Image (cartoon, rainbow, N blue to C red; front, side, top):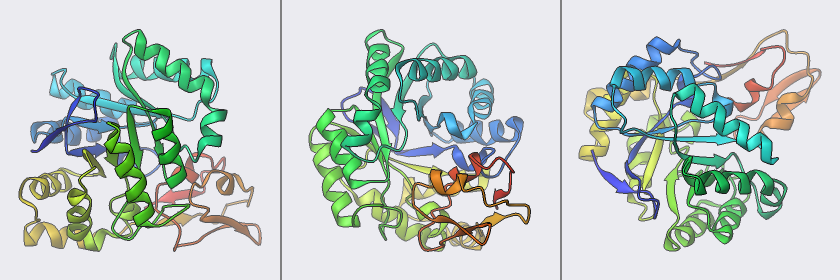
Length: 315
């Protein structure tokens, strides 16, 4: 496994980051024991970097994986939508308790769009920096699907940025792949750590997995790449790729055969909660029912977290 320092944080991370969203209740809905087994297998294979978020509901999964691993060398990242100081403090404390960790390595503001959203979340950001000063956090950052979000995070001098970028530029809300590359390159040049999300376009590019990974791994500003994985086979395949630059023919065939989709149940009442929380603007309500723009959807599953009727499923 290849390792790289995450910006100037002093954290040396595996270039393959385990994206935990896909195992959690917003997507596959594994039980903690099943997820913990997959995570422990990943740790054995050399992955030492796990991406989480308060929204994902995966803390019990990661805690079980850490328990099975039995060592304190895994670098943990979480994110929060908090915008007030106390909300941020509570979010960090929730993660510490749930993960049985005194220190969380990186804590980020979730889905920042521009300087304007950062301004609205400044009390939360200041709280995270206060916790860093106290040694409760090692680094502070932000995730974003926006070029303007990367630019704003760079101007603020955050420690880490988690931007969306892939070979097609799918999911970038306010610009092209090239514009996102330029923004992230500038951030990296200023010493900000970068780990990429949505390398497979939320699963929409899974039939081009090798091409997708070759692209993101060629980016000189990518310290690491978060990849969602749902089985030990997927872990083994992706570790093999990161170590050798390719999948075996058998691994590639299995990855291409996997299908992912979003499903809306008949009992959807068209309340519109999903439309307010879709970062891609892919959700709408038509004739009293949620509709999905397949060209925009990156299969993140965030909409399902806000569905009071539990009508949205990631399959």
